[in-house]
Image (cartoon, rainbow, N blue to C red):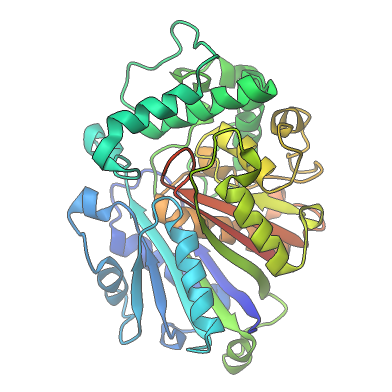
Length: 412
């Protein structure tokens, strides 16, 4: 099998950027990744463009990547558009990896960009409405809400302002976890406080204001047990990754000492499992495949970036990745084991909760962060001695779990 390397990474700031369009965000992310790799755009042999919402937000339902990339002079190569909900970026990365492994080229680009923020809140939150089966939303919603039965939301813990339907879904997942394992709202708040503290040291993060656990708990409610700082914001932004084979590194004079090895890239869809069959969650299955492919185990992981669309998501996913025992995600987080300096730092970037969540760019932004960590270039948020890194990026919903889960493993 071909060895694959991350040769360059680039990322825009994440946040509310009404003055920047899709073409600008794409150009900034790709230009930064090319500069990081030390190559020209003419070296690219294929590009995979991740985006989930431009059709909904702007009416650009087709050929998004061709349009965004041609505007910066990238053409005459295969360009594939990738939509896999919030896992679009990691899915684009997987396709770029497989292009190189197939021997179709030596240099490939994965890029994701998203313009999601709008002053029209109904339009903005409506971008998420089709990330599940739209043919029977009432029955699906009812079945998901049943997962949270047995933990009664206290009065006044649901926002009267509009928010994404997926926050209700995560709240149901949270209450199921609370009922099954004894997870507490304070433990969920500890995750959010940790991630907001991490993002203080990330100059590209949407939010850089620290929170204490008590401040998270007393913040405005979204839907129990989630409060506002526990939930990812709506974001604009872009991220890009240049991948290369060993031959590509040599042919283009890319510094091999800065190249990061990509040990595994796995895309996994869900199944109709029982809600309490936690060990067969689609992310747990993806993680087992990724560890086998990479030849490492969870005990080897130095640092992780996981899909914390809510703080509860991080607790669920560190369990799925085997970074702690099933049901122990809450206590592990409350003890500080996932903080920078802890046993296995998670989301040193600030995660989706604080760094931001421009859907198509999210998975590639995780790879950006982990590449910086493995190179030792993360500055004040550097995880000492980072050698093996894992990213988990999930998207959409089918049944009682994500429609798709992507796991990527990188190594120094």
